[in-house]
Length: 251
Image (cartoon, rainbow, N blue to C red; front, side):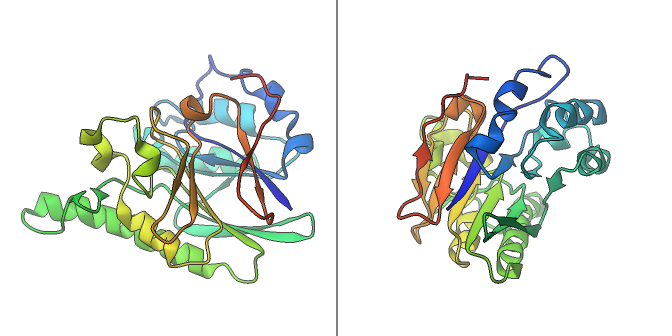
């Protein structure tokens, strides 16, 4: 069995430092790795990244993250990423990593992703250059996720980690008018084209936790405002993928 702790949209700044740490210190008893689905910071500054590294770095389990739209706000992604990697945190963007956990190999492929909408209500790569650029961005992120998932070999479980949603079900609760800005179907297609075990995302603060891709892969929205605790724990290599209740204080 592999136990994955996951959360997203923690939006760390100096006033948040210390809020999550008590629960994070309990991670070795709860999970084998921590995955964070983007929006690590509020405005994507290097200073906020340092606060995030203070809060989420130096843990007794591996920490793997993707960036979110907030982490791009100040155009300091490279500096932000350096701060995180210097703190021992793995940052994925169109690539993958494999963790050896409890005698099992866990593959994690990650990308921020992008919007664009879902079948029946999505943008199309047609018309004005601005629209082609928008949809082209969605397609590039999905292609990067597809390649990252396919690059993982000989793993016992494979997780797709994104910020934007790959399915509309986990957006339920958000206004339908903004679904196109919260995720895109191309990410779901990429997930279904690999032997993906579980897909995790954030971004939809008012969404729902559970969904599935058209191919049947379980999808979980782990945005902090949705799960309402420091992290959820998911068990892999069991009969089902499910959330285990945790005795954690809400952060």
